[in-house]
Length: 78
Image (cartoon, rainbow, N blue to C red; front, side):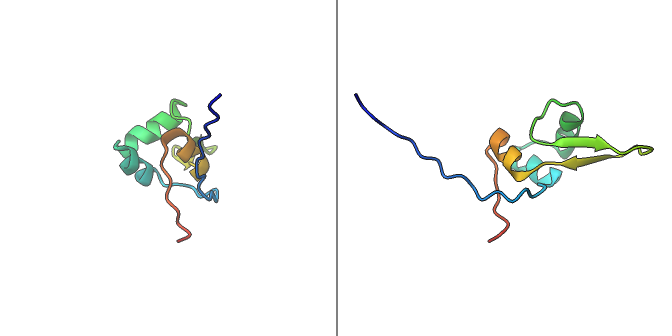
């Protein structure tokens, strides 16, 4: 029996809210594409919420979810 193991180095997640523009650049899409995908629930690496009596959305894209869904991570601690 061949016992091979694969190890993956997990980034040091901080819960940082990754900006929409940063995600868009990393995956080669337009920022509006990301916003609409989050609003419609198609993209699963963040949340789009509209506050009561507001026409604007707020976005939260935690670094861990972005990494899990896209493979993108940037360590801002360095």
